Amino acid sequence: MIIVGAGNLGIHMLDVFIENEFQEEIVFFDDKTSIQKVFNKYPVISNIGEVSRYFKQDNNFIVAIGNTRLRKKQTDLFESLGGKLSSLVSNRTILSNFCNLENAEGFFSQAGSYVSHNVTIGKSCMLHFGAVVGHDVVLSDYVSVSANSTIVGPSSIGDHCFIGPNSVIHKNIKIGKNVIIGSGAVVNRNLNDYETITVS
Image 1: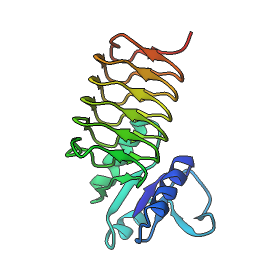
Image 2: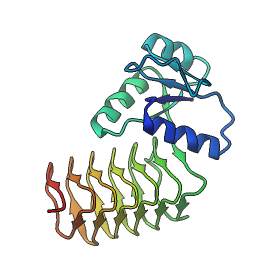
Image 3: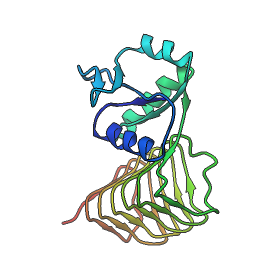
Image 4: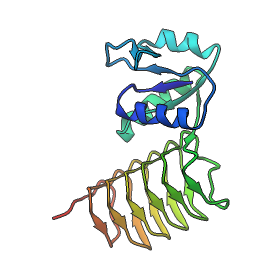
């Protein structure tokens, strides 16, 4: 398994792999660092040629990049090299038996997250510590939900949205694409594409 990105988010993913007793070899890809091993144990590869060679033995990868646009760019690149985008869900995430993960490849969820029934999750979404996704919520592709945020259902979140820590989205809210919701914000109205909402 390749974790794309050896920064803090990559370390969070490594923690979940260890927590879930993942048995396969883990390596990182990061072309923006000079480190050769994470915690002096997990190798870091830094060029695409090495990725192609690694994929001959294991083509699974997950992208540990918070910026949703960069996450998509790296996902597209690694898929073009023959990689298979994998998901990583903490054993301490609560997932309803009736949520829809059919198109949720690349889904990453940390401990304490909760996903209710009839939730639909798109490609490469992320739920951080304690995030709550209520019933009948739709998370489109490349959505990031930060720690301790709550989305009350039913609601819909467009592609490439970032939902900041400790924020609340009320029910029956429609949020467009590329929306940024700042830390602690309370959303009680629909948001158009590219809007930013912060605590005033």
